[in-house]
Amino acid sequence: MIYKALTDDFKIPVIGLGTWGIGGFMETDSSKDEEAVQAIKDAIELGYSHIDTAELYGAGHTEELIGNAIKDLDRSKLIITSKVFKTNLKYDDVIASCKKSLEKLQTDFIDIYLIHAPNPEILLEETMRAMDYLVEQKLVKFIGVSNFSVEQMQEAQKYSKNRIVANQIPYNLATKDKDYRGSCINMESEIIPYCQENDIIVIAYRPIERGFLLKPNSLLDDLSRKYGKTKAQIAINWLVSKKNIITIPKSTSPDHLKENLGAIGWDLSDEDIKLLDETEFESPNN
Ligand SMILES: NC(=O)c1ccc[n+]([C@@H]2O[C@H](COP(=O)([O-])OP(=O)(O)OC[C@H]3O[C@@H](n4cnc5c(N)ncnc54)[C@H](OP(=O)(O)O)[C@@H]3O)[C@@H](O)[C@H]2O)c1
Image (cartoon, rainbow, N blue to C red; front, side):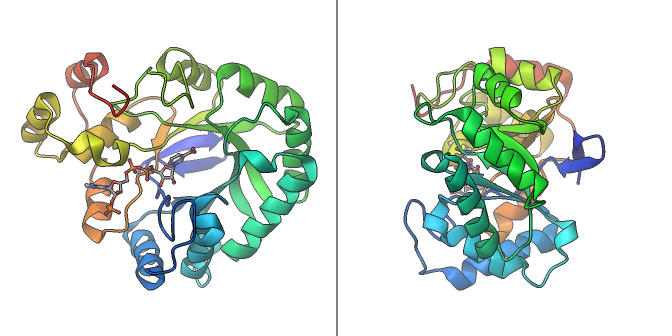
């Protein structure tokens, strides 16, 4: 595994495990619990140590499944990221959400706790006070944000005693600098450079755009042949070749889990990275 520095003394693997849809999307789906817990255990066995989740996922069931998968494992070897949803950003609600997540995850602390998305209806100052409290109480090691613009990151940092270590954003070959479903704009032109200059890790979510990037595409097909790697591997390698960017592909398939880990340990040439940078890919948005 390759790591990037989250802080001076805490490193995070460039590939982690996404969990959106495991145990349900917006609602709980318990129909595949056994397979889901096994898939998470398989992933850890294969070498995934960073697991990304959120209280939203499966209406809390995803965290429960992760809790079941990790309860007998060495917690110190795992990095768990979870997120407080944007409707729970009032002071007491943030703390209550975090405590519920801890219970579901069957753990005493969350490594990285993110604000899932900004909510202009709730004062960010109030949310950040609660995030600081969670760090003080050692319920959370590090705090961060998701789907935040540069201005929102700066505002969050202004109100927090603790450093914002990460911004999780929908960055991939298809999204690049596009206004992505209104949730994040100017990722390449503003958010990523700001994070790179300020030692903030960018957690690129939806690295293969939920499979959309695996459709026929002349450049990705050519590069796939040239490097003897799959399109998912090329798309992930391109992401993590960039300063401060890590990613979290979701999979419950043993083959895909292995394939995604095979996205690292080799390099795209500088020319091919530039070609990928400069090529406009079709996205679900256009
Ligand atoms: N902060 C936010 O607002 C936010 C929003 C969305 C997502 N996220 C996080 O980011 C994670 C990743 O995003 P995502 O799950 O939406 O999309 P994704 O990782 O781009 O794609 C996941 C989909 O691709 C399939 N897949 C994975 N690897 C594959 C491969 N090598 N070949 C073919 N298919 C493959 C998976 O199916 P199989 O399981 O069958 O492999 C799944 O259907 C989420 O799970 C979640 O943790 C965060």
